[in-house]
Image (cartoon, rainbow, N blue to C red; front, side):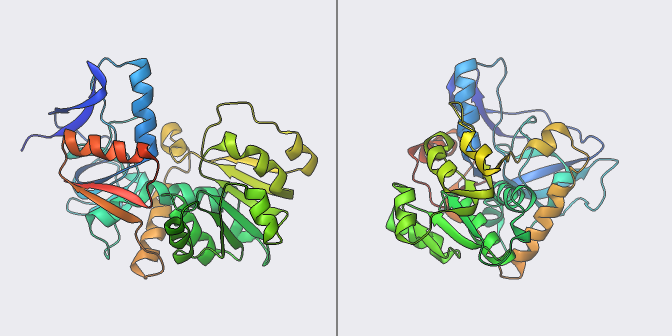
Amino acid sequence: MPIKAIAVDPKNPAGFIEISPEKPAPGQYDLLVEVKAVSVNPVDTKVHAGLQKSGLQQPRILGWDASGVVLEVGSGVKGFKAGDEVWYAGDITRPGSNSTQQLIDSRIVSHKPSSLNWAESAAMPLTALTAWEALFEHLKIQDAAEGKTLLIIGGAGGVGSLAIPFAAQLSKVKVIATASRPESAAWCRERGADLVVDYRELKGNLAQQGIENVDYILCLNDTDGHWKAISDLIAPLGHICTIVENQQPLDQNALKLKSAALHWELMFTRSMFTTPDIAQQGEILRQVAQLLDEGKLSTTLSETLQGLTVETLTAAHKKLLDGHMQGKLVIVY
């Protein structure tokens, strides 16, 4: 059966087209995967928006969150064989998962959780890796003493929906999440937040709870808009991590006075630069799969669309751009 993919249209970068790529041959560390489901993330819409500005010469296949079945393995692959069920977030420098077949570096792949179906699995990898790397590699909340506080700005989104239970189950911190709507606040509490506050008037809302400073801050949306509050709220010697690029210069004076640290998290760094520890992503996904199979974590899937088509991908991007997603949106092939 020929490979089918939905790609950004070089003649009209605002839209998508269906293409039939040639079957790719696995490199040394690659898996060729038959993709069963793909999640749609904000990175998809951001890359798409960038392509609309810059233009492109060839169709570009987006999509960086998938589950599927291994068809072939490269000569240097260890731990995987044809027929294995896998999940992964992918590599932004390579063709994406909006395709029925995809090459992926085996070192950033793990066997998928046996307790989840294709859609439930595809909803997880990118956000799980982002949340895990931010919390445990940058902020290092696993070392925090009891009584320390973590503020998650954007608790109901894809990353926040996993950062909350990761922090609640794998550290001693008190988890504070922001949400603006009642259903979003309920979602955060269900996932383990100790306290949920409205992000509007954040400092005032925390002050009403007797909280003047927090030890750790994970910013998952609008770094520019929240920066003043973040700078004011972070405790002396505190740690901040953000996943959202800034559009304006960020005033560092308050952080300098407090000897506070600012960390950046980009899930694609390891694959983009082929870092020496690139296989750590596969290991993180293995640990997350174990948590899911032990019932300590649940999928963040909230909506499913059927079929890899121009129409479903267009609808998925529109839903994300509307800005009110709770959990994750997945397309099942």
